[in-house]
Length: 221
Image 1: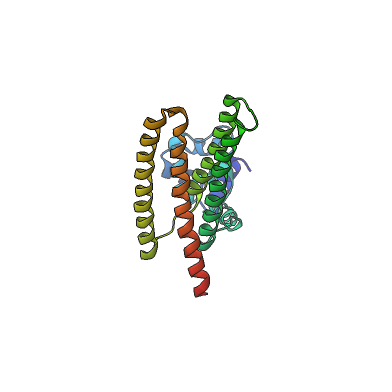
Image 2: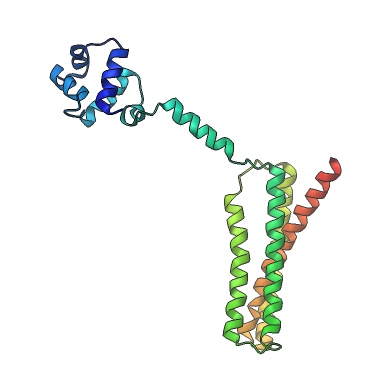
């Protein structure tokens, strides 16, 4: 159904004449007639007054789709989306963190044996090492940017504070070790791996609290 036919139908539903519509919109009867016969289309500044007059949305006037129908389609789409519970999000987080920690460990183990044992080209070995690190990090970032937010309990806030404090301590220790080892060996091109280890330890701390919380929840059930 085009706009002209729609306007004609709406006018008849409201039991209005072309003259009455024209008077309410401050246009001539001929203008209304041209709209309904598709000889012309309403100007932009007449779209909203037309919708208000016929008590419809601009979407319904321009496309013929009723707003109720659109809302129903949106609700139907929302129902098809799986809504994760708080426990499911925690379980998924533990899975992502644990597998990412595993990838971090694998990357370091690979770098330790790739060059001295397998005689791999240092550039190629380093590239593979960085790709594994990037993959593990991307998984963590993607997960925590996409999970829904839940209001934290007092226990969760307390645990989060402890995690930050422990990770801060680990970071400080690793930084001291980095400078001590670097100055002692002058192997600056290798000792930066200590910061990767720092990241792994921080994720392990987070994973420990996740698993501990899951165990407590299971025991309560």
